[in-house]
Image (cartoon, rainbow, N blue to C red):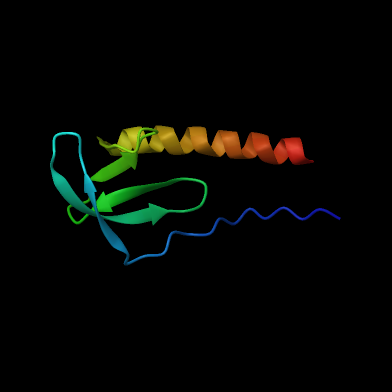
Length: 83
């Protein structure tokens, strides 16, 4: 029997860390999202995403929505392959 859950584990709230942007600026951020899609948010609501080279870039709400949509498509494809 195979059981597939549609629930994702949310990121633990209240854990803050300092990230460093390419321009040398330090930003204190909190991890938000879940195991399928997550990003960092500062106290002003700005969103940051970690790139493959471990640098961080600021993203708009629209960019995050597109990224989340792509992540969900990849996740759904993976689930279908398992069946």
